[in-house]
Length: 300
Ligand SMILES: [Zn+2]
Image (tube, rainbow, N blue to C red):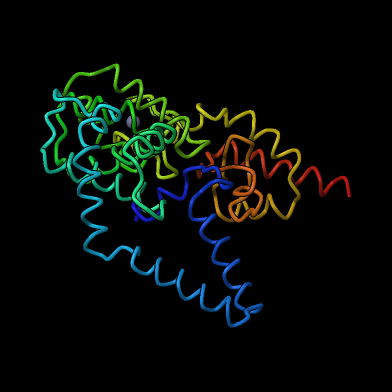
């Protein structure tokens, strides 16, 4: 789940984290244990007593979080640009802010100041934006135009699995500007090496010749042209081994990717390309292969 992982992707200053300091202290106490004289033991008992009264119970910790949440709620909404015009359900924005406050507070051994919470949130704002967007995608069935704008502007790579749904929504709202942003996000963070869809212009045509964003289906002729198949095929026929060419004849098709043409079972095809498309050979191409095989056998 995203919630379990997001926090760990935030770069932190390891040196000064309280948890580190605490750990160092624990080690120190542990080391002292071995060197104890009876007098030292007395003082240690005293200090343990002191800390045990200080240790927070579950209930008082919850009380701390409640207080922090109350204080942080409004400034955190402003920080995350969760403005009123988004008309988010109050329950959703409260849940989001509470989870963020809890996450940040869990990094401290004692109750942090509201300032510390907000500073940390500010430092990690990009990750928090993506977190907020993932929560919105989870909870909002049909985002409004304003909500969609927020999602598209702040979601970055979080949007990849939902790109089709968001594209259709932007299309319904006639928001070409958001479609442009989605296209940029997909082409930056999405799978590489896919052929551009003639309808939505995302690089999203799958090896089944359909668009993974808008669902449009293209012809094999379109793939051939998009990947300059003819040139790559000519080169392939000249350089492939006779065994490979015979295999192509047996199967009746080749694979084509950005880097070139390959026989159907070629392990290199997937190593050199993120995506490869099957292309069924037409009779003139089959004759070309047969001629090539014959010419090589004559040379032997
Ligand atoms: Zn498309």
